[in-house]
Length: 341
Image 1 (cartoon, rainbow, N blue to C red):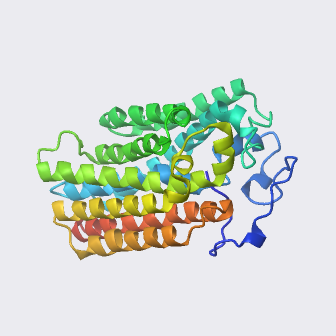
Image 2: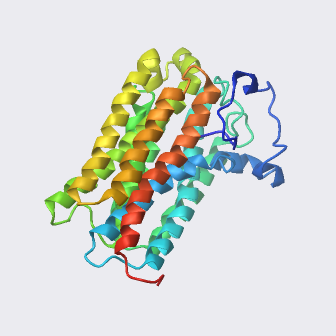
């Protein structure tokens, strides 16, 4: 879902080299160390592009921290760490399964899109049947981790997986497939909360329910924002192929929409703090810093330059994830029992 550039500076136009006509095996990075026959499957998982894994993982992290704050006796830090290690591993499998499934469904279009034509299934390195089998294996491994979690987690994990399966088809029927993606990814928050012991739909406190809904809305909005930027990489190809996205629907007006979505996300993050009576340890990093990161991204990203879209997509995932989690984490650490275990 992102490029593997690790530079801390946005690339200039001179760095935006055109993709070669023929596929070239990886010569550097993680994939260059793998056996040749394994590389296509690693590409299906996007192992060389870690930012996408965090789009799956961060909502789970937020959910565990939210639930830890809601419990009258916050759970020990070791429990939170253990649960999040499970979610990190699960995110690798589930994101890999989602990307593989997406590549199966999109292969006919990927062959006609400059950025995607060398994907493993599109170029014929993996057959659709083998890709489907690989999707099932990854999904089984990811959902298999639910056995390490309370049964309640499955109530939210399965609709997450279902929406993720629907997502590749959404771009054929709606200009807002990012909404489907956002609702799917945000369900990770509910899985995380359920793992700690809070059922998001059975909380007896109306304020807590509104807070959970606000945090969920923030996750949805964040996914829509970053994926709208991501979709601008393929704007011209998508328009020629008749594929739909926020980029094709809004085009030159996408930035005003992004400002509106960013403002909405900041407001719902602030609502979480107000509803749960959180202090400046939450508001400073989670609300103010997230607002700064989103504002800087929208101001600086060049939506007509694919490399700029990819750079800001990747870095905004990391930065907004850290700012949103840090306020919840700081508040939890201030309330948790002393010690690690």
